[in-house]
Image 1 (cartoon, rainbow, N blue to C red):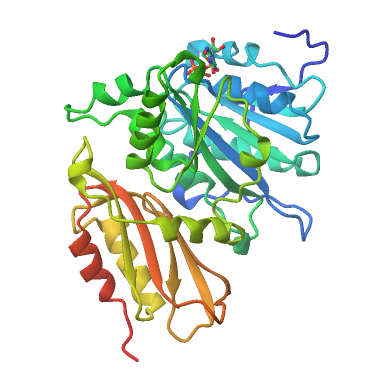
Image 2 (tube, rainbow, N blue to C red):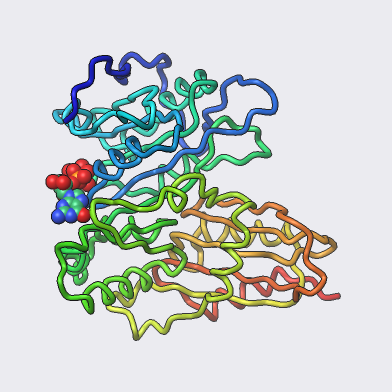
Length: 375
Ligand SMILES: Nc1nc2c(ncn2[C@@H]2O[C@H](COP(=O)(O)OP(=O)(O)OP(=O)(O)O)[C@@H](O)[C@H]2O)c(=O)[nH]1
């Protein structure tokens, strides 16, 4: 580690004001800020134990992007301080404005309320902040984080989920995925890939067989066809591909359209885990937005069809609207927003890609068709 003469403030969770833990999905870290300010982006960095998360944080902090970055680290209790000590605080590049260490539990469960409080505290100093990196423990399920961070511009929130980056270890990924393949439990490595916007296939220097790397990429795409997969050594990836992705905003529409264009129903026979799949539904008839919301509530919250949808993204052709709407969901949290006017040359269509367990294409199609409006 480099010398650091003037280390930034680390905030212990017990110093964060507030007492009763809020319900994460209903609580939004919205504190006062100047009108017109854009929300601070939060990049969630996840990945299995030892995959290279801290290496990525280090790399971002030390890159010459000039951003003022706050880092939130989540560690299990006794490790507090260890992780931070391993990270070089951005000499010559980034300015680390704050460190927030979330101890005594994993950020995806017990310290979720602490994360909300930490974010509230950070955004009070928003004028000093450009971006927040949240490094999770290697065993975190990123979905509950998205429920905390899923904030949209319309709500004039102070922070927004920028993207979920999952770092995977090219040497060990196969073993990690295989380990739980035949068990009833679900490997964190699998879930972390399923939720990712970007998957960094790291440590490729440790894999000499190029064919093996291609197999891993296929395996990653089988779990999540929506993610961008980038190979790396020591997480050295072009930062333009990592920060300010706005993966959850309408600005990302071009990328979304590209993904949907490629979207195809993967036959479950091509998968090792037959319960997880990628599927895409298409529908030309315009839809009734109220019915779509009820459908999503039923699919994602009630799970009355027994499908477990981790992720879905899509565009909607909404009845009586000139606007193309985007749909984004991470587990049960979703949003549908108008993004832009349809181009005159564009065929108005509903296209939605799903990633999840026990997906049934026929059931998805049938239930979605119930949202259409006959014109
Ligand atoms: N050979 C090789 N080693 C790497 C690479 N990236 C990271 N490492 C090493 O892998 C080890 C683990 O990296 P970390 O960045 O600490 O991984 P982590 O995901 O933060 O680990 P945990 O927080 O313990 O889950 C360190 O010794 C890194 O130097 C890589 O691309 N190639």
